[in-house]
Amino acid sequence: MNNLYDIPLDELTALLSTWNEPGFRARQIYSHLYKKLATDPRTMTDLSTGLRERLAAETTIGTLRLIREQTADGGLTRKVLWALEGNAVIETVLMIYPPDRATVCVSTQAGCAMGCVFCATGKMGLLRNVSSGEILEQVLYFERYLRENAPSLEQQRRKPIPNHITNLVFMGMGEPFANYDRWWEAVQRLNDKQGFNLGARNMTVSTVGLVKGIRRLADEPMQVNLAVSLHAPNDALRSSLMPVNDRFNIADLMDAVRYYTDKTHRRVSFEYVLLEGKNDTPAVAVELAALVKGMLCHVNLIPWNPVPGMPLTRSHRERVTAFQQVVQAAGISCTVRVERGIEIAAACGQLAAVPTATEMIGLQPI
Image (tube, one colour):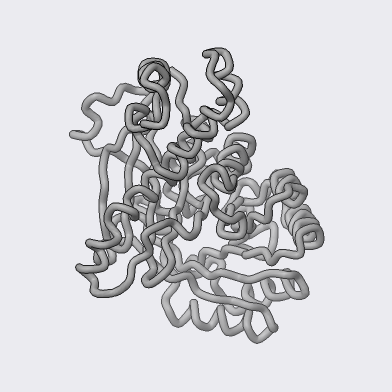
């Protein structure tokens, strides 16, 4: 069956044409999917009964199967574990920042092939890419959740809670640029005024440094924000943490980032996970500042979030502060990321999508 979330508007129009339906029916269905958040064609009452029945029989609205939901931070962080078709698994995280921001961290692959030594997802290896429809479904699930639950959350917390998603970060499981076409197709429908209608400037994509993807994004018409996982200012150190650096070294990466900033005039964010005794010394901070000085950029420091089985140590607060001060003293914007969801393994680098033995029941090996 066709997943309606996987079908762009022009292809949906063409499909309905083969059903002898007029083109405006596709726009009606599109509105039901992305504005009214319908989950059943039979609720689309402005369509004919026959068309609703055919949609119900021959298409589906979404394919993700919810396995588990967890909450943290007093209900302001919510993580969902999904089973995809074929039984690969992914996780998605909603982070609410009262009074007016709600951000969804979206996965673009099940697992990841990049192998960064500090990341739980990298330990999984790559299972498969996520389709555009599966990317969209993660977002629409939490949009629906906020519309339905914001009033009760406001009552519980006695403060305003946004009733819609305000920001998307493609920083969940996987490397978005290794699944560029499907990711971009989802971005287009999320941005489409006839679709979800979220501004491109409210979306941020994170990459480990796939330079072709960075250059391709720079040439796209939409102004999606770029975050680059840097984590070290020299090739020897970065290669020890991120195998991708052996393919695209720092010089190549910086050339691509400058191309992006020159073309878009938009600031890039360099993400920098701090590991005790590895990349968090004042000397390394000086080297980092020298590397990015003069660029249109911001440095986002992320104290490493513990992952079981990894022989790494989280930088102490004093070392984080000292590192930040060195970078700031060079005139570079530098902040420390606000931590959310650590206790449910929902923070940066912790997504591993591991079902329990009970949850594995009904899931077959991929």
